[in-house]
Image (tube, rainbow, N blue to C red; front, side, top):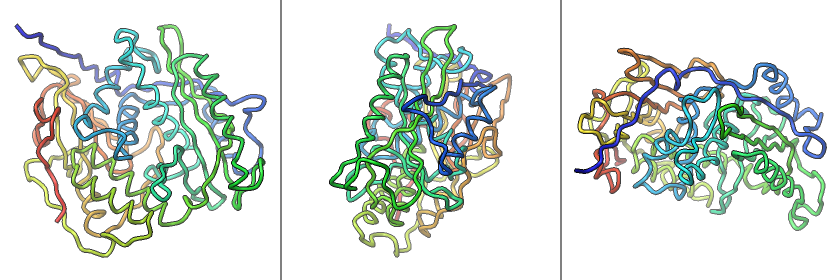
Length: 398
């Protein structure tokens, strides 16, 4: 008889407030007192007593979206596991943030995911940067490893490096690795000092998850400097970055054809081409993949994590995106204004029904994520064969 696998759903654990200790780098890692760093210092001062608040639902959602931004980061065949794997790797019962030891090496690869998510969550809030603008910017098809965005008040730029670790020793190594990037390539800037045409806050955010029950997770903000390619600040590259962000949103919702189109548009901008940016294109989708989530019409799919005989007792994942937002980008090449990530904020909407039967989440970019017991009405159901292969397309561009 084949083994049947099922997983528990704890709606309260997913939606409750958690707090991470917040620390500033010391000595050579300390944050400068110059104006471009003041938002980071204000953020630390605001949260230092109670800690940085977050929910597991936010973390799972944000980590998956940012993981899927770059097309080669995750093949289409395993896109859905961007949230599923992290859901299993993290200990939902821990007070704040902890990795399960139960699965051994299975959890080792997930530290980068939660590190990226929390770095962007915290610094989007600190600098009031819209959620869809902290994205790796490709420069002439050369991927940059860090995140860069203009600070909305016009005071300069934020350059961000994100790392996730599970031990103090690993956190020390992460600090050193970031600090080594202080040696700016003299061929690029002819100097080993800070030499930028505009004020630039260079921040590293290291998130450490606990590995045992009595430990606490923490976020440390340090001051590394790294090589800067000024081409990434060109407007076309910044727009390309937003296309890549929404490519990740589309992949998360199962819209692989849309994601591929956005990736092509991003590449065309980086290469100074005009592909797709002047053409009128139309989003075509399956009517049976549209549903209502958080009071909006969503387009997306659902799949179950377990393999029990009764699908109603399994945990299901619901992925989607605001239909009108994604349609505007596809058909009009326009991006709606997007707010920064704040916790709590009005864009995160949750609902618990039927004794915790499901919870749902909506981020400022219109991406939707829910977990629940059993399938919901609306989202296209992806079966096990589709997950491991190429599931049917639920949206295309014509």
